[in-house]
Image (cartoon, rainbow, N blue to C red; front, side):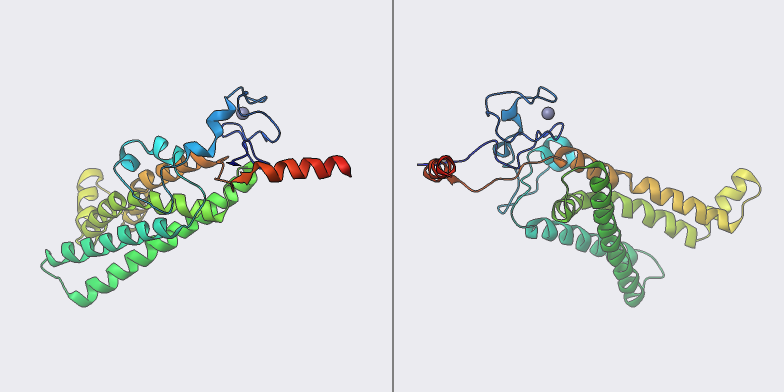
Length: 242
Ligand SMILES: [Zn+2]
């Protein structure tokens, strides 16, 4: 008969990060009092190799990331982000084609730049999460950070829409004109500053999703191998002998 040993050697309390090794699954965390059973990887069955992203990610991201598996392949997560970014590229072309000055070459080029920038920003975010987690003593290695950022990439959709509209109005000269009407004096460089500010605000949902994801997985326990109880008995027996 196979039994999964829990807590295992690398089980952490999912709330406070206390090492639960050697404690009974029925007890409470000695550090924060959370029930040890509540840190079980058995509660992380939501996503994994048979990945399916649903509206839960948008409606209840906290619960979504709390139920996310942290082992297995990142393939489905990467595929999810690729789909999001391709969708944004397609949106870019469709939106471009509604404008009078549309040109396939230009819009393909700028669309490519947008898509490449989103990939770049996403992986900068991954590195940021890894760096930050290391400093805080959180268990978020590169692979997990990548998975979180891939799912949070759904936040790029509103960011690109907001930024796209803002840049479009800037290029048309509307922002300069509106601000001059509003404030009297307005320099072009101030419009650039305004665009940077709008971009930062537009990224908030993406950043919020990453932050929620890190919060819900910073001490996440992964599914260990099923350990046959016979091996356990043999190990203890040999330990007694030596
Ligand atoms: Zn605890």
